[in-house]
Image 1 (spheres, chains in turn brown, yellow):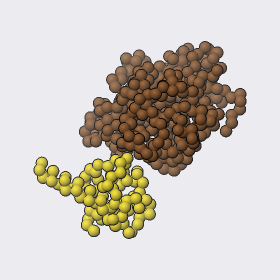
Image 2: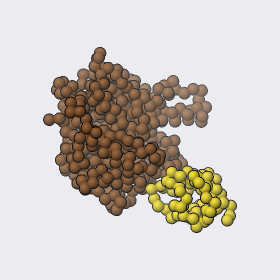
Image 3: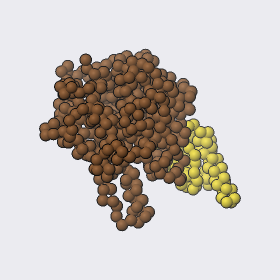
Image 4: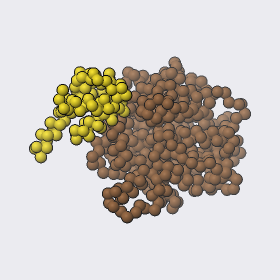
Length: 412
Length: 89
């Protein structure tokens, strides 16, 4: 699908991350490069009646320490993660904030979530049903809704243009980023913040996940023979996107160009992914970027460490990349920060951007023995030096919802 | 066929698109048009029916879930373990 030659180009001028391996890109990236694992025993809630005891928690997160404003201090943890990530991304962008006048209307704020403030809701129901409290806290509803992170960020930064949350389980962040990209490209906006936040680690949600029988009690070991399921994580990952000329004019530091975006739906099964859906999303993103498979150096894989996903993703990559699949560096950084669900693709987009910036491919850790059915180069256990000019970030969600981003270097 | 087996076959049938009347103890689960999520639901139903907990991870191939008979055996062994540990307590 060729695009007109004079299309508006979209660049990344800021990013912000909250994760189990670090809050802030510096801590996050240092951990990934050094193959550090952020997965450990749950501390946020009691473990009674759980047989899954591990997750990727954001440890000792204190919104006050990060200097968040009062509106965020009263919000759910998921919105606080978004606020923290947005603060970092906007600071890096060097934009004058809050946006004033018409500039606000030319900006978008699309910050999604898999499930929003569900821990607030859990505590509220516990109070009502178990403790027979007379009322819920007055902010319960505002804290819970899946658009609250987007709304809080828009209020903080004067973003008066399009603002809402996207919901697509584990593809939420790339769908949100992709929407901002399209709005800028089509001329609706000049800049925007896109990504997602998730803070759904609580007792009830873990019960629901363990009932699906897809979690590993041991760790998240993508593409390895010994993998036995995924591990829940939490966090936020957001990007500040900007129209290229707009960024150039104000002398912004351009981190990368968002070259392509592909989205498809398997329309087949809630949990069993299809090669068709995943491969067509990758192909559409490549076509959108006007790149050939051989141009891509690195794929940050969805790599959930479930038996089915990792084989399906491997086969989908092979279908799109053909012989070039063997020259790719692939890794699943989920092995370190856990599966951040809605926020996953946002957190992973930042790992992808740092890989490009520093010429270092982050590893897939916990990779003991290769699975014969997963036979590509997954960058086992140690980071590797490699010039990464173009990179892809894959997200494939429950329900068969696929979203793929392709990044390239800043325009020359 | 005993009561445990009959109840388990009923649960399997309930979770099949086109329930077959010819389910026997030696029937492999792979022949029953049961997918991974179906199996999680089936295990849940069995746990509820017999008030037991069955260790099961959809990412692992487990012999206990090879045939209808092996599921029945597994359930019986968990039930008898529960009984003996209950008696000891």
